[in-house]
Length: 122
Image (cartoon, rainbow, N blue to C red; front, side, top):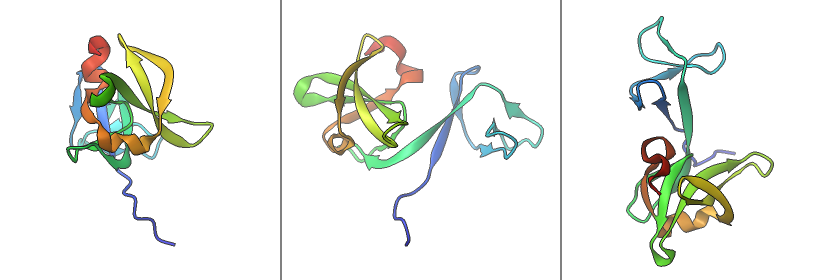
C-alpha cells in the first residue's frame, strides 16, 4: 500500500535563531547538521510537515502558530504522542491552553509563523 502523504521536515537552530537550510539528519542520534560533513548543530529542533495546508495553501508544520479568523483565536500545531496525531491547541500569551481543535480545521486558518519565531506574541 502506497501512502500519498509526504514526509518532510524543517529545522530551527535555537542558538542562531534561524532556519537551517539545507540540512540533513545524522544517523548517529537524529542530530541535524549542515552540509558540512563535520558540523553538528547541537541545538536544532526538527519539525515535521503535517500533510495539511492552511486556507492560503501554506504547509502546516509541527509548532506552527495558526490564527482562526472566525474566533479571533491563535492555535499551535502540536503532536499528541499518546494518540499519535497532530492537533491544534489554543495559545494565549505564549502559553498552551487545554482547548483543542481537530487538524481538519487548519484549512480555515492562517499560519502566522511558529513558536520559535513568534514566541509570546500571540
